[in-house]
Amino acid sequence: STITNKVLTKDDKREFMAVFPDIVRDLTETHTPEINLLFSKVLQYNVSGGKKIRGLTAVFSYRLLAKPEDLTEENIRLSQILGWCIEMLQAFVIMCDDIEDNSEIRRGRPCWYKLPEVGLRAISDALLVECGIYNLLKKYFSHKQCYTQLIELFHDATFRTVCGQSLDCNTALLKSFGSRYTMDRYNNIIRLKTSYYSFHLPVAVAMYQADIHDPELHRQARSVLLELGRYFQVQDDFLDVFGESDDTGKIGSDIQDAKCTWLAVVAMHKANSKQRVLFEECYGSQDPEKIAAVKKLYEKLGLPALYAAFEEETYNLIFTQIQQLSQGLPHDLFFALLDKIHKRDR
Image (cartoon, rainbow, N blue to C red; front, side, top):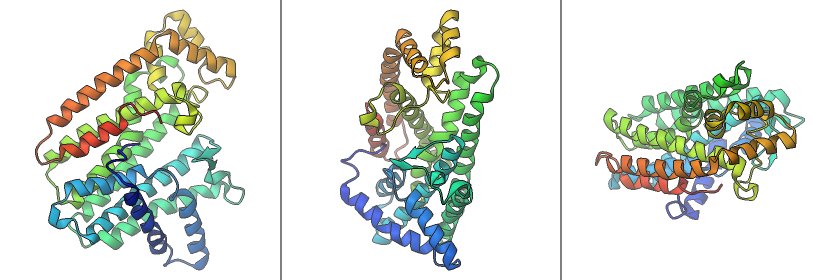
């Protein structure tokens, strides 16, 4: 949900999808027939689904960042391959995430590890997908100036995302409720778990592909993109509890999973001692009445209004931050990302 429909046409998505069979072919031509078949199934099931927002963002960003004379068919195709590498990183992360969270459903069908013929082999399958990223980078970018930077970006994004996932899983193990739900902890988790690979990575790979190496431009872009990632995640937390599942396409589970979310952190901060006792008793419970009690507490503490104020204020802050970016960065790109997130309901 990070790019406007105006900006990315149906054709862009169709062209992006058209590259996928080549990606599968590239990754399944070197091993034994059995592994090739297995890897092909893993890729088809786990990588080709979803909205492709991250991958398409890389392509869209490259179009706006590259010099006009560099926008050749070959370079657009290379940006699509980078986009698929990001989609593979996303797949690898969620394949592991689903096992750790004991999830049942992903993108409207059973999680990969839930298939009877897969089970915990899904761990090896996820690692296969991760290795595939570097096989593709080697095949298509090893002769290019940006090769080292691309490898480092993917390693870095993976490392940060896995750190965020570990922090997230660790939340429920912390003894005191007070230390589980702090704004510091929340900011750390979302920066690591969401912002880097969902927002920073797609634009950063496009910048390097477009020969933008200036560390100051990268620093400025990263700063805006991490803010966008935080904005996006706070919305996600809000929609998990207050969104319509028809709109979001998923059923919220943050309350019963005792997740460290923006709502939980603000509630802990605002609650009086009696409300805290209620929160600690109900948060993380599977009991529908207790889940409803947490939601009711959120409403009583005025969280929907606080969220609306947060959304407005954050939009204005990021808008101003984009206006102040160097001329070396196309402001249109960042405004398009901001507009797509603002006031979304899914």
